[in-house]
Image (cartoon, rainbow, N blue to C red):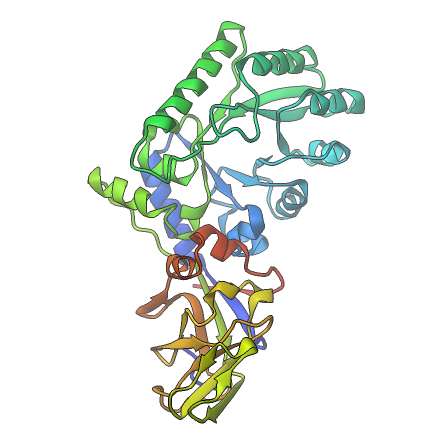
Length: 383
């Protein structure tokens, strides 16, 4: 840990552990087995970790990359020739780019199919149909599935039905798997209907991290691994459910968010800190200003309700989280100096401030805590 004279030219940065990321991927591969392909989900700037950095680490070991949009897909294609599927919506005006860059797309409406037909490209579009099984978000029901599939087959010179997929609604939020089983039943019925009509999509995928970890029957040909890839559990329930199955999975958080001390000063008892005067010193107090705030993705809900690590010691955040700054009480830490390192989130040596801890403090989920970290913050690869 830096104690003084921070060697990096940044006031805040994200450290990405190459070894932890590869470890997590290996752990997931061990659970799903060699016959199931891995799709690494790198949407939302690789869950806040940095899409370019993560792709560089994973491009030789993953089978697929899964993204949300065409912009992310094009970044990945610059860096890797591995298969890419856009899970979210692709605007009709951007479909030509996806097809020409050999990027697969999830579709669920006739307008998308018609657009591809009208493009009349010499390259076949690779399509995955999203099947609605109970989440009631993207996707089509069984009848529309058959109609779309037949429409794709009718235009087989222009497109190829590469896969079908679905997404579970609450597989990670409960120990009760009844609704997940209902969705799986609906998916299997839809696949059976396709087969009865002579349609055999080669790639079927339904499981995200929780499904991959807990329910082998959801694995099919590929699993889409997001949150677990980055060393975080989908939920407390997922961790409990795995323990009851007497299975072992060791996940290592990949991200450490750090900053530095920008100023150290003393205030007298009775003085306040920050906007709104929401915190008052009850004694003579030494405070440190840390140049990170809610514009960086550090949740304002952590105002007067968080902690950081300085010199191996935890110390509380005092006052409100501002746009670009927080203040911490360092009275009980000796010899705090300007540019001493500050850990905001993640592991550091034997200590850690988990995304789950910060999420609980601010009333959200670990996904949001990492995905909201501002893209402009430098990502630094470490061992």
